[in-house]
Length: 449
Image 1 (cartoon, helix red, strand yellow):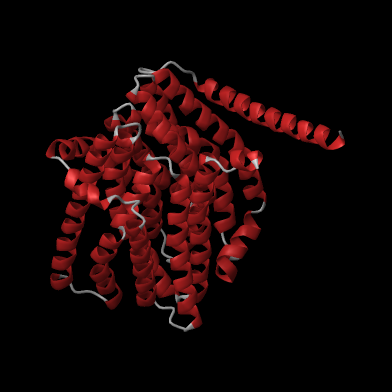
Image 2 (image 1 turned 45 degrees about the horizontal axis):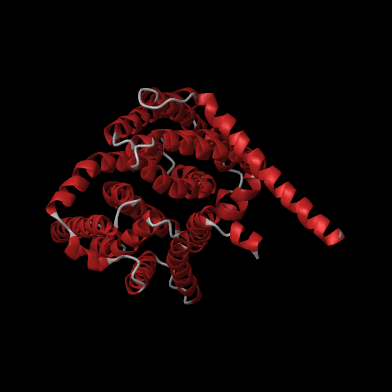
């Protein structure tokens, strides 16, 4: 029982929670890819890209601010921050709603575009309570509830898609309905469970709203730039290649990178509140230790995962994409992605450390620099290779640029060396292995005696 309690901790719960979304999301995407027409699947991808950009704007503007200012704060301060976040969340919904309303009546296009515009603001409002609830739970380090909430969201959408397939209603509009229904159910669960703390809106203050805006104006740019960093490849491929199917061939390996995002998101989710609390105590040495520890452990753990994914790329693509992606460049593109996957932890932790140190403008510059390197690298890669491999290879230089800039900026404020990250990572993993071996030996000795 004691072993089980130690096994089920905030780290494993965060890992499980962050695994729910990409794994079930990948299964759902695979089902849609196999059952939607190519046109409807393309419309769904386009809607997801557009919605994700707007949703990233909201999370970039509010999530980091809420977690930063709530972690380790007293109850009155926490309610003040949460209430102000709710106020800004509703303000953003109002802006998106007005823009959607005006666009729907004055911009006429094809039926699928009309559906996107009509449901955009509705879905954006429907996801607000669940989004704020997840951020509050992250700040409170209640990763058991984060797991439940993510499970509800993904499971309801998965079941809705299964029902659509069973009823032979797998078309674009049906998928939009399913997505909206899932968002409403998840948000209702969040509200009635009290996790979103919607009552805190009466505790909002203009001082706190201004504080969140001043911090968020940089993090929103970072968030959008981060998404554009991933989305720029898609837009450039669509512009540079005549065959529209090339976009899907590149999109699938990109989506499969969620394999790497699973541990990365979980480590960040557990590290962010601890790092923020350390800064509140003016203990930058401990914050640096946390950054090095998590980035180092994750980098080392990603090596075997990347090797397995590299070797099994063909099988993975066949299972997820089916016959539409067999014998295409998708598997080799995925292999290239796995080669630079080990750079992601250090790059990501350098970014959140800049945010935690209240230097979000430097993180914005870092991500924008990576975006420029990526765009230039894509065009150079396509010019040299005349295929998708050039686009994928340019990502290596993109993340190297981000790491070098982040290291340069952090060295001005923190005392650490790049090799400290790997050294601490190896040390922490060795300590865990040694502890497990000791426990196993003790259990064995007890059984024998």
